[in-house]
Length: 211
Image (cartoon, rainbow, N blue to C red; front, side):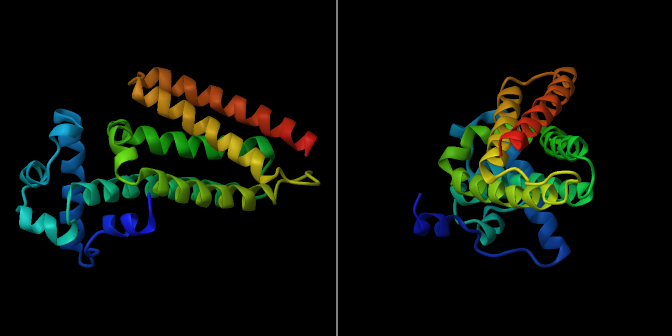
């Protein structure tokens, strides 16, 4: 997707006042609910506005079209996940490597499953609304946060390189996407999180010995 196309997906304005922010949040939630109940093909700005209890004109003040709206919803969702991981990385600095990995996996998985319906719904439309660009920015932010965290790991002469971190990110993201698209049960998601911790701890420890 070109830069000009992505620019066209940007919102017309950003809410500043609390009331405006609440309106946009209601529009986001309505978009998710329409997507979940009626599917991507039947998602329209009119249906979203009706569900949110606002006029179409109000929606258009912020988003010029359906693609722009869903781009913003995707960006908002991934932004929350990314921020959760960044906070976990900052909190885990100087802790043992195994605990670092545990906190990062916990943060990512918990952020995704706290609104599993949102995650599942957005997988349907991500490819059509600039999702790849949003995902790339998210991956870059979380990678930088993990690099900074791992630089502080005690007893490690040389922290893992970017390739190892990206492999771990791909493993976590891929497993969670599969689990959420399959609508895994809460019990299954808890077990998946436990196994992801084990997998990532083992992989990163091995990667360090080969670095």
